[in-house]
Every structure is written in C-alpha cells, then in structure tokens.
Image 1 (cartoon, rainbow, N blue to C red):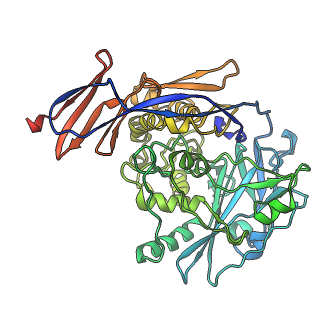
Image 2: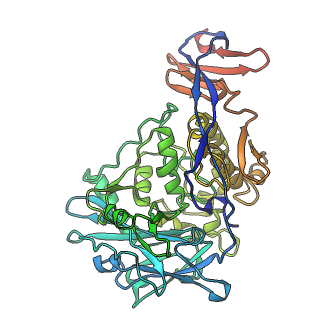
Image 3: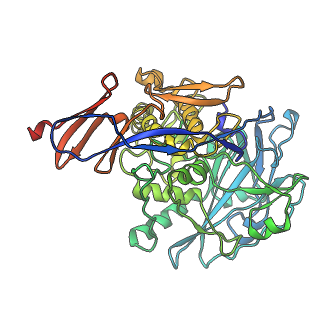
Length: 488
C-alpha cells in the first residue's frame, strides 16, 4: 500500500496559538508538588493548507546511464519512463512519480566525503540545463542511492551499467526480480566499507548529534522517535522543475538561470529528518560539499546512516523483517532484508530472529508516541511535510505513526496485542488536524524536567542525586507525586 507521505511537500501555512506547561524539578526526597504556579511556555505553531493528489501510474523504470560511477556517468542524466506504458506515462515533473538520485564520493587520500546528485529527466527529453561534470579525486569510491514517489522503481541498464555499477534494487537476480519498491543503490557496500575504515582510523569523524530544544539528544534515522514502517528509505536530493516539465540540478547558478522553476517534491524519510524535524528541534544535520554547486554544503542519505551508526544510542532501529520493502511475495525474507540493510550501512541479520518485527514494534510503542507528544510545542509550530495529509509537522508525524503501527503498516497492534496510543482528529476533507497521545494533548499535558531529563506527563522514573525516583501525575488532584524510596 502506498504510504500517505508520498504526496508533494508544501510550505504554505498559517499561525495559531497553543501552549504546553513545563515544570522543572531538582529534588532528592519524597514530595508532593502542586501544579499551581507551573512555568508556562507559549508556542505559536503553524498549520498547513491541503490539496488532493491525482491517481497516476505508480510503476516507473529508471534508465541508468553507462559507466554510472565515473564523472561522465554521473553527469549523464538518468531517464524516467513507464514500466508498462499501457498504464500511463511516468514524468519526473509529476510529484507522485518523481525519482531522485544521490551520489557520494569517498576520497581515500583524505578520508573525506563529498556529494553529487545526478539529474533525472523524462526519457527522450533534454535537461533544462546540462548537469555539472564533477571533479572526482584520484581513486575515488563512488556510490549511488535512489528513491522515488512512485510505488515501484525498476532499473534498466545501458551498456552493462547495472553490473558495472554493482546496482541492487531487490533480490531474485538482484535486478527487477523482487524490487524493494521505491529504492535502490549502486556500490553502496564498498562505499560504506571505505568510510567506516576511515572512521575507525580517525580520518573521518561523524559530527556529534547535539541536544534538541526538548532537552533530549537530536534524533537520527535509527531513532525510534523518527522511524516508520520502512525506515531509511531514501535520499535528500531535490531538483528544479520548469513550467515545461524539464528538470535541472538544484544549484545556485541554475536557480538564477531558471527564475520561474520550482523545487521537486521528494517525500523521503531522510529528508523528513534533515529538512523538517531537525529544523523544528534546533538540530543540525551532517552536511558535505556539493560537487555540482561549489561552495555549497548539502545533506545526504549516506551521511545520515554513517552518523546514526556512530552515535545512535540503544535501542537502535534497524530494518525489520516485515518492512514492506523487504517482503518477498508478501512473506518475510532474510535475503531481501539483508540486501536492503547493507545498502544503508546496517549490520546483516544472521537469522530471522535478529530481524524480528515484534521488538521493533515494542520499541516503536515505547519511544515514538512519547517524543511526538514531547516535541508537539515545536512541531506544531512547523509546516506540514504534506498539507494534503496533515496540517502541521506534529499531525504529520502522528498520522505517520498511526499508519506504521496499524494493520496496513507493520501491524504492531496484532504483534504486541496493544492498541495504538495515538488517536487522530481529522477535518471534513480527511486532513489530520490534531492528535491525542496516551490520552493527552500538548495543551493539557504537564511535563517535568528533572536535572535536564524530561518526563513526559510528569510520569516515569529518573535519577536524582544518585537515587532512583518515581514520578506520577495525579490528574484528579492536579499534583505530581515524587517518591525516592532509597532516600528514605
């Protein structure tokens, strides 16, 4: 089933007032604190408009140019066409079909990474502006990743480009046997092997994650507060699209030369984190030089994965066996799961137990809803990734969780025998306009910050002066009960 988030992005939004109180506590004894006089923080969120997306052919083929890992191959446009023309055309300018390509270049001499995003055009057309030919360092190790807004992307080679590029987009012959769906990669394992050697040697240093506005560590693509049913599912590339439907690389020079062009709409998990969540939480994604746009720094999927591998604290989210992209004939497949994992620098699963979806669901339940609620004052103040689905970043994340947790996603409800903790509220057009999480909304919730540790709803356990203390919010009495048994 095509995920709701695959519709085009929009940045149109309007303001609306909300608030969420926060209590700061630093105690080492058993206490009962009345909530009168709690610190109140006022936030001004933004809420998006919405528009319906039309039904289109969801199965597209991407023609990979010859010698795809060379400078000339990178600068030769990939071509998009319909897998079955009888089902209708595939056009890069259509936000429900657009496919995006991202390349990463590892320099073995310096241990550094640079980024280059090859262009995608419609088959038989010309780009609005010819792509920049990148300057590659001697002995460069180049890899490609791709992802699309279509349902299934198949790869077609040119002069042996698929085998030469070590391209993978599924199993059963690797190419077009059983595709992952929207994603694929070329030479990714070799790139990650070289990058990880450099990290181990200290030549390449993934930056620290930093602290978010909510007081917690900034999330990664392997954080259970971010992942969904099919995590790490594509690149952060974007293109310029002209009124005639031609495309061009997104560079400063092309922006100046094509004043009427608009940005394409890449609906990827990685771009959700780098382009939306990080900004809302005051976090900074890892960036590297863009070889197509001198002086520019850009985000990239391989940077996300390397940083997550280096810094994500346990529990770490890894592609589970019931991720829709790794199912084989609608059943679990260790081979396909591992084929996907190695393309995003994740450890392979030695057996199906190591990729079991049930513990993935348990962590999703324990971590996801709580942080979505915690971050509501910030994400409600941010525009929706897709206004046709939800009216703010908060409601977008909430509906994304509900879809992933439910029967059409990972079916965590059945696996855990636990109901979904998030209830969505929609308007007459089906757009999500609010959400209740564990019976709370951000406007009624009270959180406690205990020496920098935030307890959502002032309920949970934390350490105060070396003692384990439990917090319980009594709604009826409007009190927080704090008990530290070891302190006497």
